[in-house]
Length: 138
Image (cartoon, rainbow, N blue to C red):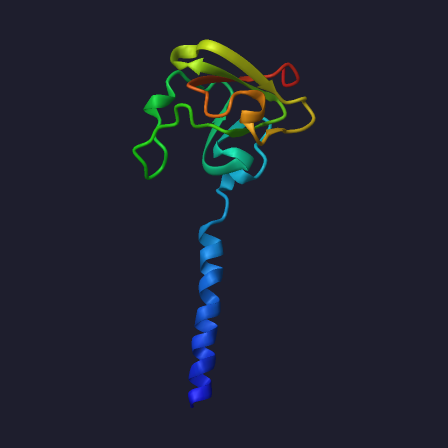
């Protein structure tokens, strides 16, 4: 009897880490975007919260977009992104498409992965953006 209970307790303890792993999986956006999509991530290497946009979707003011379960907004938070093969995104330093900007474009054949926007000086720096079709999708 005592041995059976010990085994049940041991199995129950082993099951708990499996539940924790499932709860900490990457969001659905961890996969590659479709040809027209752009995925934006809170952290480097596609971690944290994420947003998905397609052609002609613009965000003029990321201070109006809230992170899930947080009072914090998306302004100056984006640290990595993925761009679908026929898409491009122009990131702007200030709201309403102001200040410095950079355009990140896929090559028409592959998804453009940018796992660390800090490496190009744009991590935690974006306040607005525009998503468009690139020259390969036209």
